[in-house]
Length: 195
Image 1 (cartoon, helix red, strand yellow):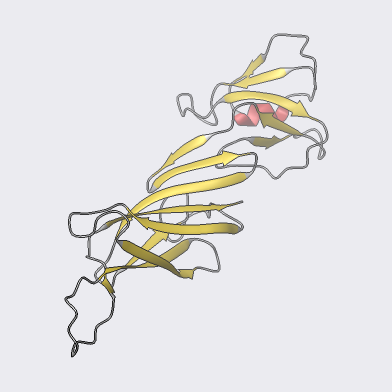
Image 2 (cartoon, rainbow, N blue to C red):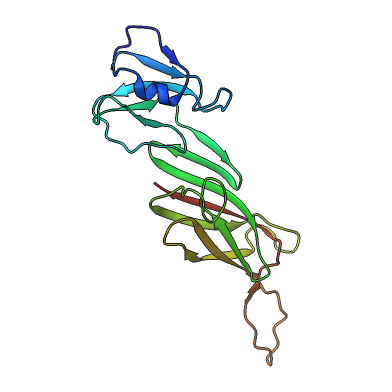
């Protein structure tokens, strides 16, 4: 790619879609839809790309002129969500989220852009799904174990169960479980990757 002119500037993502395609031009969008929404970016035209549009990050924007080719953002995006941070690097999305353990020793995480069970799903596929303890006074980091209990079919929620080591003095007559439910309110996190 050889850039022969200064970047063009357009107000919104909708204006970028209407921009005539040209591999030798960079286009700077000021915003997505409203001035000050902090979703503008610098784009280059890739005439061979057929990547899916990316409404969460605006890393990939289709053209109104042609079905083949995409406007691709130069710098990939990180987006702050209510439940954590979402990154997107060349189509691989990673959500790093926080939560607390419920009285049933579970934590449900919403995998939607608005952190609701009915919002727009972040992922179309989940490749890696890990939860972990952030540590508390009664359950230091590393003492809480987790396991995935359920991943909704619509990929909008995931639930993990949390347990901690049960420190009990052993006697010959005592039979016990080595783990018990994690303390309600324990801080936990989630790292989930997919596309």
